[in-house]
Amino acid sequence: MRIMVGNLPDDITEETIREALSDVAPVNAIKLVPEGGAPSAMIEMEMSRADAEALARRIQGRIYQGRELRAWVPLFDWK
Image (cartoon, rainbow, N blue to C red):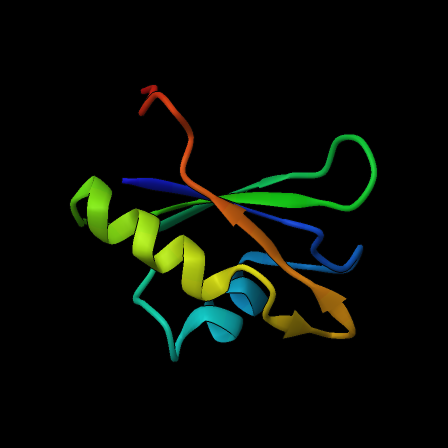
């Protein structure tokens, strides 16, 4: 399942995303999306949609390097 995480710091890397989310969930794959405003990342994990939505709610609002993270599950799980 994919979860989008937004409002990331400009200097974010795949490794720092893994570190930031390590206490929440293991991340299988990460794709950084640096376009438009603050960077975002698409993270992939093996879980059901319901579990992904619950995880997105846990990530939502967490403070990381002074920024309040945004998280959501895309409506469609595109490939």
